[in-house]
Image (cartoon, rainbow, N blue to C red):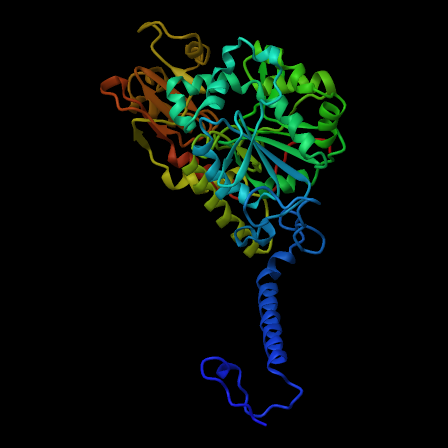
Length: 502
């Protein structure tokens, strides 16, 4: 019997002569299964080039399938897991690295949203800490100072901002107009780092690596995953860009520092209440990253290991390119505003797609940043610009009293060539003197107010306020030298990861 279709309801599925064994329900199921199979085949074809790559920079496990989030965790906030996000299709998705981002309530809504829309989008798990409990777009922000000792807080003006924010009946920005959040935030920040480490380990104790960064730090996630895959988290590691206070070495917090699970266990699990133990010490110190290093040394006997320039405190506009910054992979950059983070995120994605298409993917190197950011903008001279030249200075010593830093970076007059002797007279004289020197002595210069400054690396720099006459800042680059050198060093024979025993 042929069933008469009902207009507008059955017409699309009506087949005039069908064996009785095929019901409308079974046909619908068969059609859905066929469509699902076709979609699966299309997806596997699209991803085939990626899963076939053996480089761990792109491979999340030996089968080419994204690893699930850690047991019992769906990942932070209202977002799909990176394995389900097409923007992260070319990114590794390990389950053993945790990113911990530090911010302040006075800046969090200016900085964190861009991180959530870019870098953190493809990070499987992360925590955000501030000096106030908040939610940003559904993502939790934890109060890093909730366990600070009463003894450290009582009568301590460093916590004025903290108290004002907690009592604020409206938006934090509105209440902070009653104070100076920039300087107050800096005073408060130094109490955070050890407490953040303690809270992090209690919340997420089973990770191999803990990556601590600021909200204006850019994390190059594929490079980071590739690098940490070479290292042993069961050894005590504390990796950073080293700076010093009174001869004590510590990892610069803005550049980011990385702590292995062995070090975190020794610091937190074996020292209950370690955060409060350093509250009073923090009160008399300048910086939280310094206090964190003291805590690691005192409690875990772990010292920072120098990972510069891979862990880096510069950004594309301030990176010094050249022999010391070229074939090195980079995993962090600092002082990046929201526009810069978004711009680099887009560049990193283009680079990643091109690498995968090549069939021979490699990490993003510092030289790649030069080719994207500085090379297209190279010119002989730029007015009202500071290209950060400061390796060598040329001045007329008799003209006025110069600061010790300037005098310390001057050659002996007996070593000057004829053009160097007059380099201080004008910007053209400074440019001519730079051009007369070999590339390892000068590839760029800056002239301002009777001072000629030269540099051995090439840097983009930034604009400065306009000034008239001799006080105008003029920067220049020896474009021919730079192009000759970069062409010669176009291919990196060896990728220069930091020297570190795994």
